[in-house]
Length: 167
Image (tube, rainbow, N blue to C red; front, side):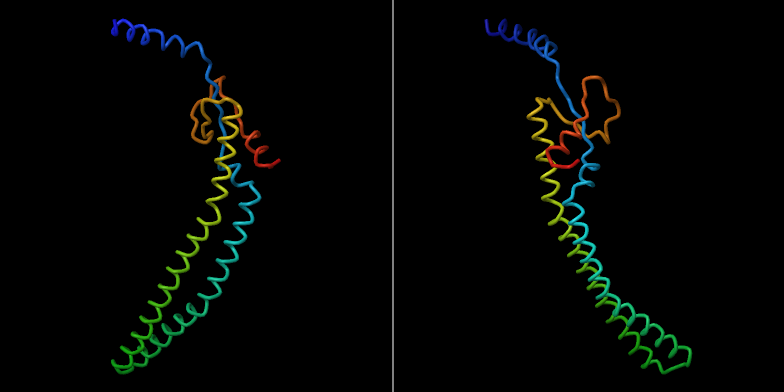
């Protein structure tokens, strides 16, 4: 008896699914993300931070150049090996400081970017999900990776922009 019921369910399931028309949507999240006002604000903040780090790195770069020139001049004038070794050690120490500064700056820039952009990305995803739920879509796909778009797929970018308050 159980086998007959299971067989009936297996036969009926595809018929029920084919009777429904599934509605899909597409959206280009990258395009929408790039026009969100919050992104411009975040990018300005990141640009200011980058300029600050570049200003801090400039004296170190100039000092590195100075140390290289001093070393080359001493080498050209056939200075004593001890003097050359001392200048090389100064350069290497300064280069290590510079590399450490640049690594720290890059790490901070990455963390700031994540901190500033993650909430904006979440806001976009929430808007896409809300449009999907409100519109009764079976799914919303990224139009940038969609290789073929049939008749049953609607571009919902304008709805997502409206949900975000973007014209």
